[in-house]
Length: 112
Length: 114
Image (cartoon, rainbow over all chains, first blue to last red; front, top):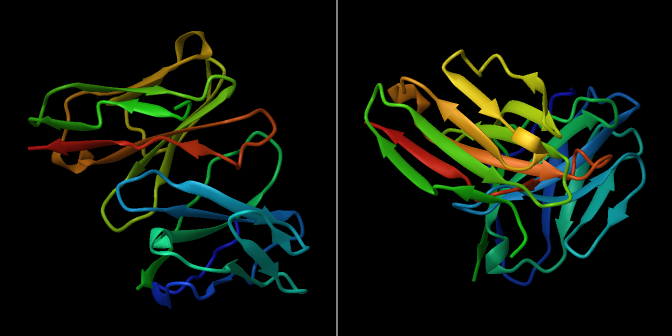
């Protein structure tokens, strides 16, 4: 799996957009970018994933650069409940290998 | 609530004792995963089942660890002769066929070995 680099921590004001970056400069053509988050004392939660195109769902938007070497997870209107560790994971989709490889992630703190 | 459930939520045991954790996945999910998470780290993969078959085991899963998933339903993770280094959060996840990267995690079992 391609290695990912994320900032250790970020702050965001409640109601503002939170933009979480992830670098994955060694990503290969068939690797997807996945985002999970983990709220304190809970298990990780799937947020969104993408290959090339930008993706949006009810939780967030995922912007992937044209060269696919980096991506940004956007929470459009952050709330206090979005305070969590956010993990960016790069992995090949399909086949029989579905283990997720988590790094240390980014601790996002949403402040009132 | 039809999410992934894990029991117990907390377990304190003395070094050398055996412990067993249970995971009940979402009912229609045929894939089940176990992860371990220590303080300040992301979860680390331990093992994976498709139905009742255990298809992959991490090298982290020493011979003191064993996992089962009889009849492809709930799963158990047993640790024999616990060591202080086994203290961690043990997370279970499940997924639908063909959607292995959209894993649904349970709340975890926190193990403390004294």
